[in-house]
Image (cartoon, rainbow, N blue to C red; front, side, top):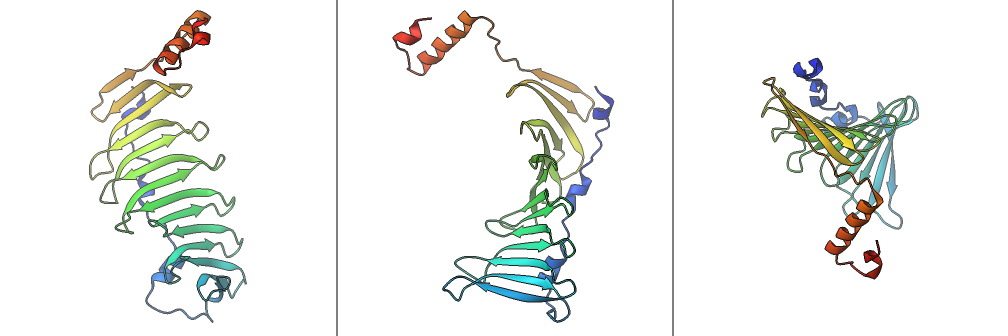
Length: 242
């Protein structure tokens, strides 16, 4: 067994930290904040309507936009999403979405690309259900952390190849704990799994191998095609002419 698999170190403790948001703290605070001290508001209403579409907030120090709060189309008392911006660069740094369930997406302050999306329970917006991390180069999901029902302990982590979008490794955790119990690594030929290697925390190793059938000759390819057509009820004169 490779040495790096025996240690079972947990590199994912940092993903258990709730994303920090000054604006959300400010929004949830019972204490009213003076617009003269912090920001100015710009309200936008829907066309030919008295319904509020969104509220932009601008810093009085820099004049740049610091947030946009968008409201539900049918109910302007209900917040749909909140976009937060870097006060210096003006780039978006965080989006909090409340459409179906609460989710928070964080962006890089330098590149503006997605870094991480934290999803919360539809029943409890303080309980994490999953965290999606994105590859900075390809801007695709590279890791998914699935949380246990308590919203604190990680249940499983899937590591994904951002180019092929195939799961290459699964890390399973003990119940109600951040201790790793097993690691599964996958090898592929094309889009088919040909080998699965499992490492367990009791230092036992189990290997399962899957091999897809290899068709070498043209005749074998034609035979395989004929069998496929038979099962699909597509047999006709042309398919019999091998």
